[in-house]
Image 1 (tube, rainbow, N blue to C red):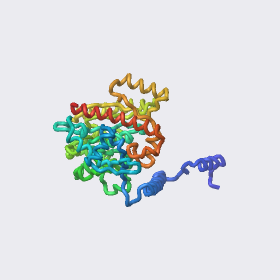
Image 2 (cartoon, one colour):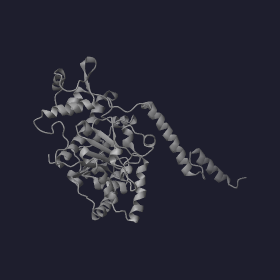
Image 3 (cartoon, rainbow, N blue to C red):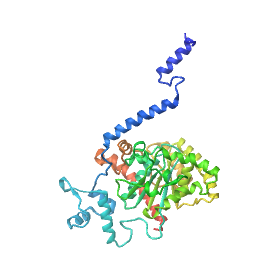
Image 4 (spheres, rainbow, N blue to C red):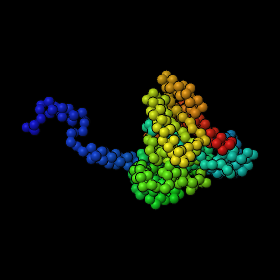
Length: 411
């Protein structure tokens, strides 16, 4: 006999049948095994979607979509084509014209030359304007930070801005959306950690990568970012001369002239790297799911943020922003409790809550399954009403943020 009672043996059997971890098994080995299995499956999934020899590419846009992006009539766009002005689009069955992202950019440049008002088609920075650094943040998971960051960065690139996206989340979902698989593509580094580490940092230009969106570059992320959280306490004790909270700002200063807007997808925690991002930011966007538990969590987040950033400010950090807004995400207008929560937030925070919301939509979630955003997928993959409802929601939110950017530039 093994010394156990019948009741204990019965309990052990129940644990095994319920799928519980057997007593005595090392959890580090179990978790490591699961990580290896999951990584292998993700790689197989990636190779089915995007073979090793291929790279993610962006679909072409219909002339109607391009006309909407440019703010002109489709008939005028057709006339430009017939007159031989601008890029030559792909013409498909039925005479439908399709433009690539780079061709949309070329159209913007051509139209800007003849525009009466500067910035009509290329709305980015002018002389004297500062680069807008937007931190998308909340330390509660599931608030749609990455979804918001990706759609904002891509839409601003489509609208003619020069955009840099930075993935500060070790889980690297923003990187994955843009075709980078952290454990395979960043084996030798290549995250922002390389540019802000204390020991021999590299120039940030060396880690910036182009994406398949014309005008959008990215600094991908992976688990290396956690090293900054481990290094900083040691450097504080050692009396490091450059404060930790200035390191991201210093790195961005190297490429500030190259971009109009920087979008930072922060991790779901308020650590040293998040505080450094907030110190580098010129604007803050807090995503919030309108549920009671999420709002309660945000309350704790705001308290902690206030206390920590006060310390940073007293240490010389710049805590002034052009704007700060709360963005309601995954919103269901027919949900009574959510409506009450949104009303509560608007009465509490007033103009600091964006007027527009990101609706909860199967179109957004289904696009994510294939590592795409709503700006990438073909609308034919969804029912017309589902796609248009989600797209209108995202476009309205991004347009409102763009207005804040323009206002920060005095326009």
